Length: 508
Figure 1 (cartoon, rainbow, N blue to C red):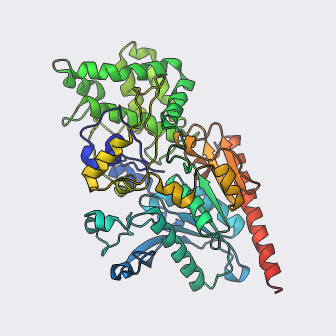
Figure 2 (cartoon, one colour):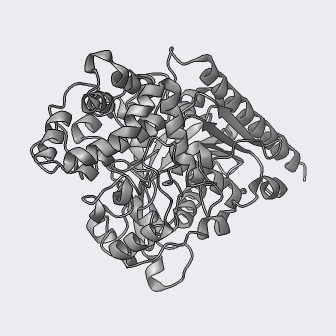
Figure 3 (cartoon, rainbow, N blue to C red):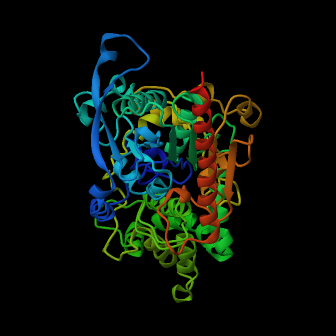
């Protein structure tokens, strides 16, 4: 779940957003190209019926005993007890391990939990990740929390997991629900956190549903070409002509920009607002549209990243293949981009350098410069993007420039394990569902085959980014209905085993 406006180096350090080229295109999770007015329309007026907002006094540093470590901040969480069977019945607690952004955004796009709560009589809890949304350390001031590397140093996945563990245990204690089993859920980065939580805190969570969690996208375990290869295949599977038009367009944009008044031609062709326009910025804007359309290539209309029709990749290729545009490449590309950026038809022009951040995702640039070194920006010769090799040095230089720090690309596999995961994890791991849709470019770094009987991979050929966690609709295809039914069955087995073990332990 999640992603940056123009990808590229701006995904690592926003200071680089004006120097974008398509030759080094590292997509990150967070994305802020949804305009505030779109955000307001996407946040349902039924919000208060979905959950209640609460706060927990959280410790700043779980792993040190320096005086500053004992500082606290208010961590937000959302709770829904409408269907909870209560502590007397040891009814389960379903916890969403929050992503890199406002927790309400994720709660409102995780309908699977709300729809299964009545069946399981579950309490729902969505915990916001530290340094995002309203969960801001250092007096609740984002400006202070993001001010330098010393304050941002408390933003990490391990601190976040410890936050979740601390909050869950305290909440269960206050509810006198210490024997209620906990199942954690998450999508994208949140899915990674869910899987890692089950591995690190098995005494707290009995199982985890990790949807579209690219936990193998580190330390050269997954090819850096995988991400763009999948996007290319998504578009090429819809239309060979669509693929060819996109592939040749990058050079056409460069050639046009180099001509006298070429930038004005680009501005007019793509309806760019009367501000900055450049070949690199335009290419990044188009790359973003293709990338996120592939990620959210859902079988039904959605409003997660932007208002989109069902199967947006197919619709973008239809626009490119439209015979009405003849051989006018830019008109074809504009039609495709319009599907993604302006499906509602409200926009009169487009801003290539839009630094608005309605979901509060800015902290991801720090995480992408410290431990979240996701290898995604290589492009092969047959890619729809310009051919390029992954360069770790580019990441190092931008992170030194932005934060005066150097990334630690091996830390995540060291802390959580990833190398030889199919051989290693079955020796000590259990009760994790790894869902991946193969149209999702992040699926290349996901677990795509079963590791053991309880470490299960569910793979959907037509699936996109954490589509299984979305609210269901009457138009959902049979394969998606089957995926969710399978997940419910597996979770039911976990809980049945837990209750069986709980009953046995009462005899001792």
